[in-house]
Length: 126
Image (cartoon, rainbow, N blue to C red):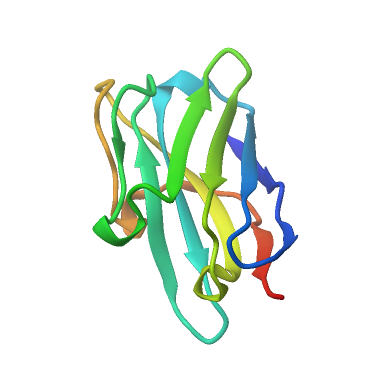
């Protein structure tokens, strides 16, 4: 499956963005999905994950309530809504996919993901 993230840009602190991830070349509903990010000078970190059918989601504690992951299997799309952004959220955001056998499987570990998109830059600055 091929993935392409989009929707990044420059936003003021406190602002919002909605990232999109378009999937092609596979049966989208076979894959659990995730968002990761790499901030300048740092390693890539987990942001959010969603199960195959969208009913299960998972966030690290420090991002609950600010970020919302969702998907539309009919459109082969995944989304990440970013709210109350701060400068520490500046990063390249990547979407990733892994084939899983069960609808509610959530995958957090980067090493388990099989497919990665090229990333979209989010810059939070005044």
